[in-house]
Length: 246
Ligand code: G3P
Ligand code: CA
Image (cartoon, rainbow, N blue to C red):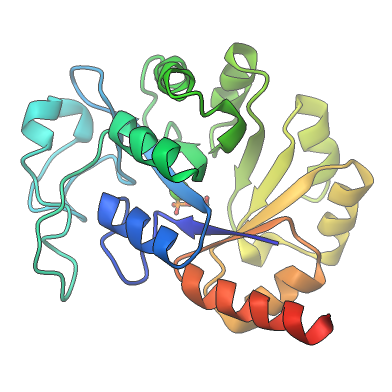
């Protein structure tokens, strides 16, 4: 079961910063999950919220900043216990690092609340510029965005994100639309949905797995991956389980 660091090692470091990605990689985690949006001048950036207010010392919509303006914000200012300044990374900057480190990435297209014109196309251009097609996958709550990504880059797998309620026929649904993975919130996954995904050959990456009981259950369901704020804990526990069972 693959461990994906949710917004990097966000349980201990400021989410979606290069520090959080680096720290996750240092635990041996090879998969990162991150969120992409676009600035006013069309730069693809790595940030979760449409607004800068929760995670930085700035205020206002990401889409109303140029990248020159956005990069001056401190993305670690509001994180307890972190003294250094971290900027909001561009997706290109992240890809340069991921390419050098051999890191795989689950890229969430944040087009659920606000639709950024051609975010899919701009993101794919950067992935291709770094030759990262085989080390990436897309996910999104906006499944139309996933269909667009599929049309532009059929070689990159897609995971359909669904909130805590889940969908009963998820396997049928994903296979019908060509999505290789289903990405449910943990609370929305059941034995029946797992069985339906397996029946249709659809993989499951479940989020956000931050409790040991959830990790145990995800393993019992034979999920393909867990998306977690604590990649180190998950990796240590899975290594231990593997050793016990060998
Ligand atoms: O990939 C799972 C998760 O990232 C989806 O929710 O809000 O953390 O982006 P959110
Ligand atoms: Ca996300």
